[in-house]
Image 1 (cartoon, rainbow, N blue to C red):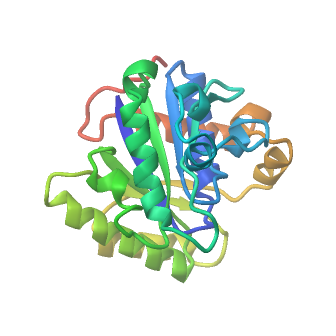
Image 2 (spheres, rainbow, N blue to C red):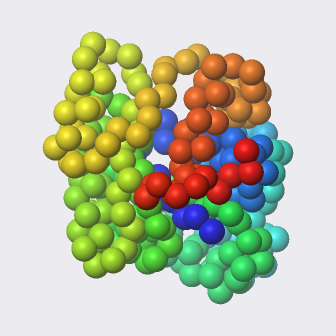
Amino acid sequence: MKKIAIYGKGGIGKSTTVSNVAAALAAMGLTVMQIGCDPKADSTRNLTGGVPIPTVLDTLREKGDAELSDLVLKGACGVLCVEAGGPVPGMGCAGRGIITAFEKLAELNAYKIFKPDVVLYDVLGDVVCGGFAMPIRGGYADEVCIVTSGEMMSLYAAANIAQAVKSFGQRGYATLRGLILNAKNFDNEQELVAKAAGEIGVPVLYRLPRDPLIQQAEALGKTVVEAFPASPLAAHYRQLARLWAEDPDGGECSCPL
């Protein structure tokens, strides 16, 4: 089982990237679980026809306990979808909510029962408090990728996330694999991101082009991979999926391509 945490500044296109890669991996024949770690609970929306799914925290609040069937829902393209959820607005800690969700999934043996080949954690990265760092420091993720554009605040968030990952990496936790450039298409953007990656000490793993097909697919409640499978953008997501499925140390790809 490969476990990858994807971080990035809010609104940078992180959930769009993760759900499209999840759909591409599922189309390759892999069992994929996507876990949204954002209080907005909208990570998996494009995998479920645009319909929000019950979150772990909402279910626990309403029922007092939960079964796996309450928390893990299979999307149209076969991806196993989970949303951690968040506290009641104005009350509680969002990071603590992620910890509660992870502990509940572990208690219910979610990974042993579903046996996913790939687990993708979609994590809000404006801050890296204890709860939001849980995929890194709790042994949940093996690798971390950061989605960013060339915008200053996005790169600032990426640098903060990278610092946290490297700090935990010294203790044997997840390693930082690199940056994913989700392009906004302004002058010198690639150069800015390449410079930031050099300062952080990681590669730019992939560049995703800006494309209106993303908004068109979202309007249908689908990923680009599902709605427009023959498009060049869907091919980019499939290529990124192969990259994430590969062993970064040079081993053979585990995908049944």
